[in-house]
Image (cartoon, rainbow, N blue to C red; front, side, top):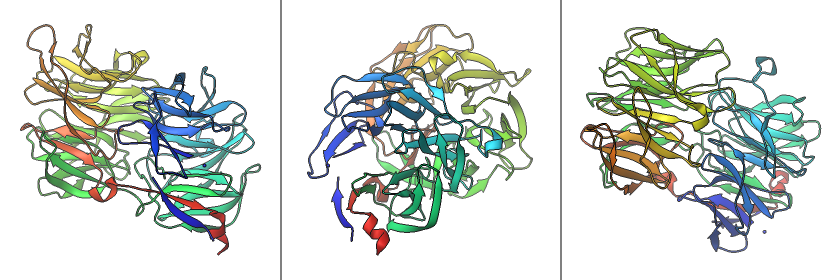
Length: 528
């Protein structure tokens, strides 16, 4: 039978400080790999001497011993990578991208999956979590139409030449091949099913290998890895990990919760502070009041995400998707009317995200993702023709806009310096850019007075005092407030109230401490 033990041959993993660590499976000692600060999503080279990972908007590689770090190519918001036997890396560059291939030595990425409806793929969501098969020509990946667990998620079998791409099954999980089996997560268990990696054919019924395996439903990902010598390493848990909206003060003290525990992504507090909106892993927009009750404010026919309040609190803006086209819509906060389409982005665009409404109600700023997976900031004049206009070009990978309380300034994040940093620029004229963060930064948010800005640096919430009263921005020194247990860092995962409290999308306390478990000779479990 299989032999099971706890583990915090070798394994690699990202830790809470967002770097890559290496641990022998025969020891409890682990060490940080030099040069991997802000790194996540590690994967091995076939010979086990090198490691690929994502950091600072790039796909990078280094040696397992921590040698020089090499940039392979751009990858703004990576969703998994795999290193093949023929010197090719495949990866997902963003939350809405296809799978790309690139030479492991570096080069220009080439898309190898498409979003053609004829292939039963969705151009709405994301292709992610690729895993090479032994021949180095075929691979597995997840097609996640909603970018998270949903009924349409599938594991696909595809080829580098883009001539093969078929759905193997509906499953909200990544797939890994080992010992003639496809391993994947289902109903809280890791299961195995006989699989031919050359033809892409599954046979027989799936059989449970281990129970109580964790699943990150916000990303359609289960953290496990299988070697060819019979070892299976996985994160133990009680199935899908949800989230809880939690109130904190500026010291990190918990003040209370809002709503039920579920897989939230982005959140926003109403102008009067009495309500909040949040989107879920099913990309529905929910309204939460001070009693914690929830009301669905998008109809079943809409795909809603990145909700934000209008300046007067009467409407909620959100991105939607219908008839193969992204748009920005509005719905009355009281649910009295159907959603109204405000802005059409046109076919071929990969979507809009991180909506921000100006305090005077005139402008709506947002991140726009083009077909190349590049992020740029656009804005529309809601009182005019509502035509999207570029503000921060896609070459800067601008994201997460946030208006100052007086509407004169726009904060945003960008990788233009080589890593993600937070900037402030005048709005709507643009021009000078003032860098707020000094050691990486994401998700800027203003205080109610406009005299303080918050952002995330690794897993710390940072604060910067500033003066924007004149024609220039005067910036103080960033200081950490507290470490956060954020559930999903890809959305607008926190909001600041007028009285200085923080509402955060937080991992439940029961799931904040997770453990790896190692199963040796796992295939024996299938024979019992």
